[in-house]
Image 1: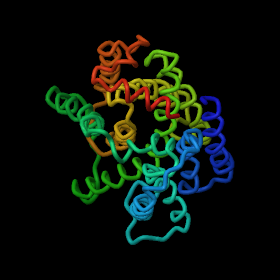
Image 2: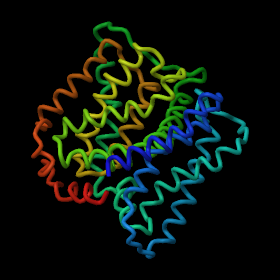
Image 3: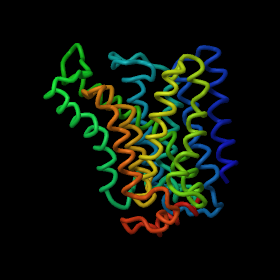
Image 4: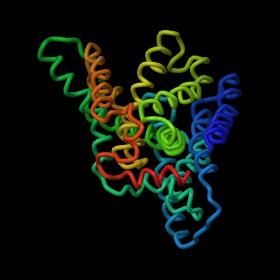
Length: 325
């Protein structure tokens, strides 16, 4: 199962990213490759058991999500730091918007395995952990930033030429784009398929560290062609330090939420958005290590038996989530 997922995820992504980066394709076209993990996850999750009772709901959900995704792409295209108005229609945004619409509407898939995998993105059992996951990054940035301002430490303060209202609108579209075209494209695979499979054999901590490697390597075609981690220093900072910390935190969130995808999708989108639109203090960034250390110790993530009986009592559901894929 793990091997099949990884082969599909890398193939579906790299078949777009490698020639795309060599041919200097625009960001909209490259974004097609980002959907590789979600598409691979849906493929390996199939059970062949079909139910047709919710076809109408899926059609409606698909249409609504496609329209929202297309609007986000047109107003805030990938690769642009500002909102685009008036809209310059890009024909590639029409098929690209289909991908998140298909993934999310699979909460009502005919196939029971695909539905089981993707349903908790739109229909979580409860909203406690989705809210925690969404607010965690703003709290991590703003609380230390307020303290840093009091004691005179430097701050990174995002600004917008048209004021804070425009910055808030930009942040909204930035989050929507990160949610639909990054987190929704990745998390059904990394946390929905790979993490439960690894936690069957390894402790949550070890599973997080193992998961980090293919997750990091998956980004290689972008990083080697001028992407975010284009230098050794940036690679060590982003793909090693930050990504390992993020992998551990997202394992903690996934397990605490009972194996639900919405919290990790929200958290992933938040990690990619809020540092760009909220003030933060560079000297305080080391608190991420404190946060990760606390999570590991508090949940004893080095113990393999923790996964069988999470403190929130959702062990049965988590085990079911793992077996479904």
